[in-house]
Length: 373
Image (cartoon, rainbow, N blue to C red; front, side, top):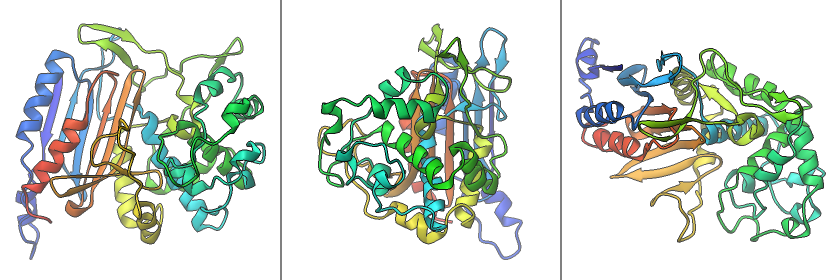
């Protein structure tokens, strides 16, 4: 089943006294391609595009649970994986604003059991992936027996001599690193004296009004991680259209890098909260975007993409995109803000083979063809 709705903002705006008409972007091409991919099984999820407080486009299709014939809807929660990094970064920046953390302070000041060789690594460098540290996510999973803090302690205690050495001078070279955000999550917990999830809820989820977003709690069975399933949460699928395989995933292992589950409306509210300065101050948001790092030649990141502090900065045909993407083992997510057009896009998918770059680029091109509001 496919559900599609387009809001004609240009018509609505003429009803406002003294308001100039704002042309509605033409998403016909996106809608046509989405319908095709939904029919072919290439896409299953929810797409929402908004400008200010108005929905411009909404598309829902596919099933959150194939076996029980449960359809994806706007109320379905999805595991967002690496898009969680933006929320972790916002949490860190809120604590920086409150004076509880300092961007250019050593990670060893917050996580004292990191190797001595990492003492020159700062929070800023972890946020923009220039720390030079090794990505120890696989070891973290292997050590996960109870909860994230315990697994992280075991992982840091088991680092090899090679892993202790930095791969590059901190601050000089971009290398995408999931484990860096596990260190940031632990640093938040250490600095606040409270569990990371509790801090994220207080500093980001609640002020943003993300009422259905949360961080996945550990699910341990017989001393080993076990996949979390619950009502309202989509199941993820890998494979290919017509040959789907239910994905087995443990999002809770990546507490800072990928543990959030949310709906499209959670992100609509996040966008509104960011615009209103309810999460971080405007000058803090500007700091997160300033001096973005460019991946070295040969890096697998999309052309034109740069990295701020926990956020991607991209440009398509003169339109700036600011946000984050995520996805692994059954799920794909893509959250983008288009500041020149006061618009946003959120795509949540429960097919690990789906692609979303064409969607964000298509939205940017559609916005580029309309007048700036």
